[in-house]
Each structure stands twice: as C-alpha cells, then as structure tokens.
Image (cartoon, rainbow over all chains, first blue to last red; front, side):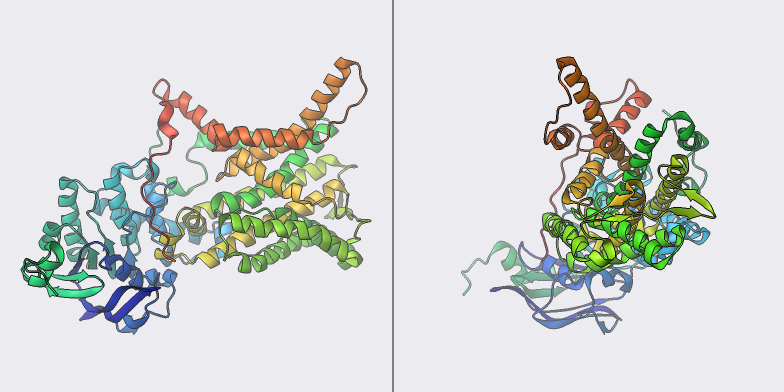
Length: 257
Length: 366
C-alpha cells in the first residue's frame, strides 16, 4: 500500500529546474533510498515533501491526501519526520531537551496550565519523558543524555537528530544523508538502526544517501535522480547495473548526444 | 562535585534538583522578605527599584533570551502597563489587584497584535521595527492627552489591597513586599513555562527555526505567544513602575529605557532567569555608585556638585562592551563558570565553555 506518493513534481528556482516531472511512490513499511550525483535534486525532493518548497506543478500525497496545502509545521503532526543534511539540532540544549522537542506535536497542555505547571502537565511531561527514554535506549544515547549538543562529536549528533525525528512517532521518516561524515564503524551502526527503525518501530524510511554499500545493504528500492529527473528505479541490484545510472555517475564510454 | 542520584523522571522536572538547592533559594527568599528590617528607607527604595527592573527584565528575557526575538520596544510596553493600570484605577474605579492584572493582560494583547506584523521580520530588522515602536510611544502618550494627561502627566492613584493602604512613601515596606510578591510569582510562572512544552518551543525557535518547523512547532504562533507573555510581564513591571515613580508623563518611557532593558539582560546573561535579576541589580546600583563616586571626587577636589553630561550612559556603554568582549554569557555565565571551577577543582579546564566549532548550517531554504 502506498504511503507517500509524489506525482509529476516540478520545482523551479527562477530559471533553474531542480526537479522535473519526478514521480515515485513509497510503499508502507519499505526502505526507499534516493541516490544521485550532487545537484541531482535529492534534497529538493525532501524539502518539497516537508513543504519548505512549493512545486511549480505536480502533487505530493501522504496516505492518499494531498499535503500541498499544509505548512511546514503541520507536517510533523501528519506523521512525517525528517533529519537534515547539515544537522539542525538545538545547539545550546541537552540531548534530552532536543529529543523532547520531538514530542511537541503530542502536547495537550493549555497555556494557563503550563504557566502554573498543573499536575496534568507534570503527568504529561513524565509520559513524554518515558517515550524519549525508550528512544534513548533504542539508539544507545544513555551516555550523552545530559550533554549539550555543542559539545558532542559529529557522529553522535547524527544519531541524536534521528532520535529527535523518531520522538515524533512518525509513520514516515526522511533521512537526509544519515551516514555522511560518519566513520566506517558508525556507518555500520547506522545500517542496523535504519533496519531497526523499519522492522522494530514499523516506520517507513525514505532516505537520501551517497554511500552505495549502505544503500545496497538496507534499502528495498532505490530511485536514482540526475539533473532533476528520475533515471532509474528498482532494487539496489537492478539499479547498480543500469546503464543510465553508470553513465550519470561515471560518464559514458562513447560520447552521448 | 555533587552528583544527583536520580530515581524518577520527576527529578528532572521539579523546581529544585535536591533539598540543598531548595534550602538555598528558601534562604534567599527569607532574606528578601526580611529586607525592610535590614535596610533603611532609601536603600529599600533602591531594592524595590531593582525588583521592578528585574520583572521587566524577565519580560524581555523571555522574548529575547529564550525565544530569540530582539526587541528595542519594551519601553512602549512598560508605558502601556503603567498607563493602563493608572487609567483603570482612576477612570473605571477598579481596585488595584483587578486593574493590575488587567493592565498586564491588556499589554500582553497589545504585544500579540504588534507581533503579528512584526513576525515577518528577523534579527536586526525586528529590532529596528520595535525601536520605531519605542519612539512612537512618547507621541502616543502626548496625543492621548485626555486619557494620559499628556505632557502634564498623571499621578498614580493610591493602592488599597483588602483595606490596607500600600503607598510607596508612607509604607515603603508594604510596597516592597508587593513588588517582591509579583517578582516571585513571575519567576515561578517563567520557570514553569521553561520546563513545559512551550518553553522548549521558544528555545527551538531561537536555535533553529527550520528544524523547529520540522518538529511541528508553528513559528508564528510560538513567537506570538512569546510576545504576549513577554509584554504581559513587562506591563506588570510598568504598572509597578508607575506607582514607584508616583507621577509620570511622556518623558518617562523613552527609547533609552528600552535600550537599558536590553543592555540589562545582556549584562545579566541572555537565556537565564538569574540574568534578569543580576542585570537589574547592575542597572539599579551603577547610577547610585556613579553619583557617590562623583560626589567623592568633587569633594576631594574641593569643588561643589559637578554634573558630567552623558557620564551614566557612557559607563553603561563601557560595561556592555566589556561584557560582549570578555563574557558574552553575562554575569550569570561567569558565575556558573566560577561555581564549576570550585566544584571540579583542580580539574576545570579553560576551554570547557569554549564554543565547539559549529557545523555547516542548512542553507536558507527560502
């Protein structure tokens, strides 16, 4: 069953066409990877889905409903979480506080009850904290719980950002280059976490990644973008041997065009 | 170093991490309550002034220090609270407690209304827009003469709470306690917001608006809430200021007051409630210290009273520059470092608070 569907989406910035007629459908429960050379439009597609960009034409549908009329801050409540390519954490807050922000869409307390910190607010906070602790256990973040982001190594920040997205309890998580800048070991851990996010948490994963061995290891389907167009879509094995993909990455032997 | 052994999530949520910390604040409160016995009327007046500034400072701290929205227009909200309170008591005959509460709420609503167009602006542009607000205030007070008394000014009506007269001059103790009660309540409310979802939303908007949005935080609504709460608090400070000054006119709430407020929270330490109090203490104490020093110098030189125009402003400017250069975290930040130094002795390292290299920020998406 289709969870997220992008239909014939075109995004333009002035004269530059970043995405041209891109269509894809992410099935519920799969790990769907998007690969492509720099400037292929991968992050543009993510920003389109999280509603930071408006398409010139086309549609984005989540669970059968168009989300084009939604604002970026409505997306989390629908069940779509995301991470950022360059890590956008709240630098001066602790890991715990960062994860708790992910619970924002689940808050119930009214403004007056928050000002007096009514017992209901306390109960709610404890429940949020419980949910966040489960994520901390899931991602092995216990040693960093009380540390501020500014003091954390890059690899841990990546994991915290995924944790924050998971705290939303999304149905779909968009991971923008989860393994970029990670060491070999950290990439290995990331591989298992991405797999666990799907199998243990039941969250559909849509990710942009350059590391082909990671992509091949975890993803069910891969979409290759180049210059704003879909040039291949299929299982990792199919895509890797696709002639156009090889051309896009390595150039063709005989001069094309 | 003290380690808190946590046995429940509530340990992180409650106001004080342990009994020792709670005792420390209880002692502080006890001293604050006993202050009228310890100080003479002049110094008690100064303490009252510091408390009122601290309340106004907490108002601006919430907006600038926590929600990250700079404002150079808070003198306007002080004026709004001051005049609203006086007018409600004078013209509508409301008792003080009712008019005081309403004055804050009205100022908060004004703040939300002003926030709606101002929210499209970021950083320095927001500061400029709010600066305009500050400049307008003076004219608005003059133009609204039938209500505000214009240039001639207004006199704060006497306060009566449950039949007890609270007067700044006749009963400075009672007025001090009134200000203390407001300060404590505002501090508690502020602290509660910070540990509730709204406080986290404020911080998220400050640190990364784009990822706050991705987490489902609506920036417009959150900023409007920050403006509303901030202006409400500032309005209460303004109402108390009116009673403290006794008479006030269009010249009281000028741009200088707005700048002084901002300076106060920067010196105190942005992003901490403590900072509002430290900053208020500096703003309250420095002018008196300057007066005393000037008189001493004049006395030593054998001259009479000397007036040096711009001395106070100059010294405040100098203090601000020194803080921005050497301690951007303000007085609160410096005290935290000292405390940590002694707690960790001899393991404190100089670069413990040095900002780590920050990684690339996501390019602006729009």
